[in-house]
Image (cartoon, rainbow, N blue to C red; front, side, top):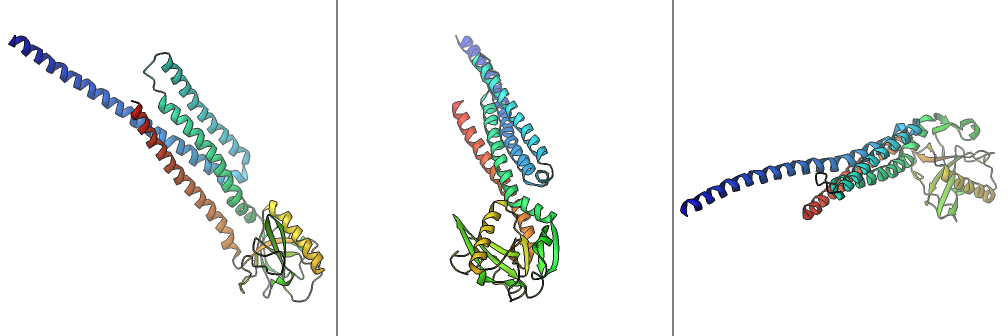
Length: 309
């Protein structure tokens, strides 16, 4: 009895030792697989967001927009590839094949699709708001020492940046605002105090005047050193500023044959490169913000999948 008990105990110790080794091996294998799945789940959607966001935000979108959307389509095919793998794993699991775990594949597919949609929206928004105005103005001409009384607007249709002659100022007595949800404010830029035959240069701003009186307070209106203009590049806003100029023509009995619209500033180059800085800043905030969101989703998935196990 003692021998049997001893043998049983010895066998139990052997089985227990072997079982511990197997369990340890299984746990170690499971840990390695999970770490790999976690890394892929964290970095693949984030890299997709970052690369697609960069492609849509910067120079390539301006010079080769078709190539950008080809890249976006290729990224979407990759996302669908993840979806196909996830669907195949789900079908295999339903057929009784326990060697393929679909949970992380499903997670990668869903978060990659989310990253693709988010990158498409963020990249396009950053390009249209910040980078396209920068590229547009940079590709236009720069004109120094422009006298508004002697140079007509038709002569400077390709102007992106203008430096006016000393003494140029805003004639706020002829300022006007046009209201359409926002108030679009204009004031003529003039190099002389006497009336001119055509006011072709106008400083503009949004929601910086009442629209009822000559109280233009846009840009650097009160800076005595400001005598430069940075061209307005927003096509959507230009029509409303043109209506404001037409109201000024009717109210003050003046003419604006070919009005050009500018932001009135002291240092146009500084304002121009501020657009570029905003574009880079927006991109970096999106990149790090998405990483934080993806990290939170992966942590939540680990917690949920561990609970399911």
